[in-house]
Image (cartoon, rainbow, N blue to C red):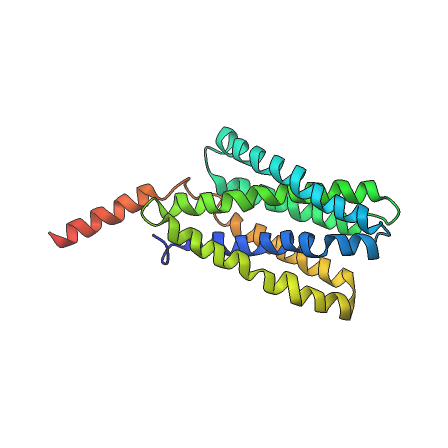
Length: 210
């Protein structure tokens, strides 16, 4: 229910992508705001921290409620919507004009608001698809992909910023965000969980052993 389950790998790739966008904000958000938007470093740090606390907490809570209320517990659908929202907000944060710090603050908070939905729910979706028999393994795979993203958002983006400027960093981040949305969109018609499939597989195994 894990290694041969395409849904788990779809969720893992999407997790990698959303973590790239998240860590780009965490690692480089304050630096970008000071160097590119002309914001004071103390203000920039406060904006990034506030986006994590306010946007993140609200995003997780509302994403969970939205999934149960409107998506019939299909967490992967909420993940798709939130990933699109996060990427769009991140793009607008990038393109917001310098000299308008309040606008940059709004867009970075919106980015965090949408990022923390899939960050919380991708693991939930993986657990549902893998069922209780393999949910820990599924979440382990997602965790590996998530933290592997630091290879991109850390050293690689630092190199890009020095060599080609901040536009290259944000362009790559937006592309990766779009890839994450496109990948998880492949699951749109998937069921909320994998229990029906697991029962079918177990029944086939039982029949073959008789």
